[in-house]
Image 1: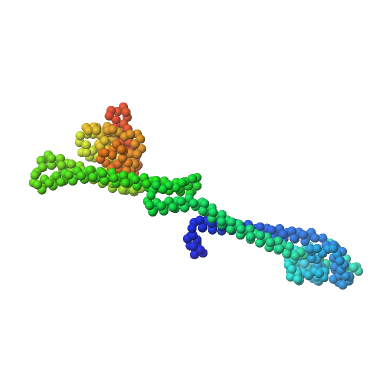
Image 2: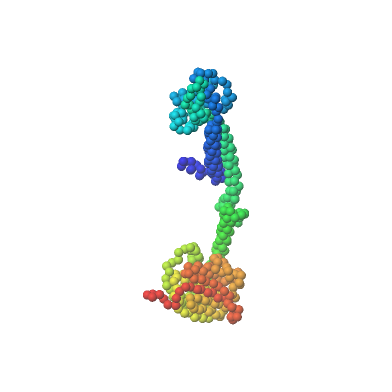
Length: 478
């Protein structure tokens, strides 16, 4: 059995489906055929028994038959021959039958009828010539009057051959066998056709998957018609390949953007370091102010490199990654620390802050990085000598700049990975900061959004809003 199952699993799916359909139909046909055969046999037996019970035997013929058996008179010809076999049974169990009749054995049930212990008896028996008979034994309508005045207590057995049942049943069995065979064969052929037709989309899907695995071509699409499972599977495959293609394109764009962003600070760093190295090699000292400017530029480029590498490392973490241990932290302190970094990045900007106390539960390092990213964006897009306004009230941290703003059609995409606004591609950055912000805030149970500043406000710009659940006072014991 185990070997058969193992071999069955090695067959193609359509072959297995055809075999399963044929097997199921075979069981169903066999059950119906068997039920039909048994019901027909029961009906034929009931009809035969009813025919035997309703048979009417001429009493005068029975008397002549009894007299013939006793040797009193010859048996005159009678019209009662037909399909019935008739014999008499006396109280001694002696059988009396016509010369052309093969006697039937006498059973206890027959003797019980003779002795009037039971009204009748119905059973099957084998005649002396080997014919299987159905026998009905009953007392005569009246005591048989034997010529010469004698009487006797005699029962009458009326029989018909069982071939009247067996022959039709044999014919029916062959008919059912042939019909069942045709039905099973037809079911197997139909199952194979249905399997081929039904699995054609699966074949197309298999070919598409093999093509993608072989060529890495993610533009393959499978036609999906209807609402069945195959159509849903095809649509899911199309969605998967589309997502993979989009992810690959974004990754390629990320690599290109990261390469571009890395090239700029690295070029500046190399130039500045070469100037410092040439100064040491030639012995020509760089003026103190110029040397200080070079060192400041080196530090700024190193900071930008570190920020970009940090964004890439943060982005490499999967969305489902378990965040670090959550702690109760002071959002106002984190915002104040981020403000100090923002002032260093934009010393020519005016940064106004109005921070109230607010304690939240979050991962401190990740939350600080998210706030820093939001402030860095505000600094990057602010005009020279512009103003950045930061406020923290009732758990909502808002950062407003007075830059060019974000077009309405681009707002739905600002938190997507790898996405950069066309207007911001010439500015430093990799387009990863806001996606990191969104993930960090969501893991802390909060929300983040960008919206245009109201038109009536002077200067326009963009407002970044971070809302986190918390309280203005720390928990007891902190």
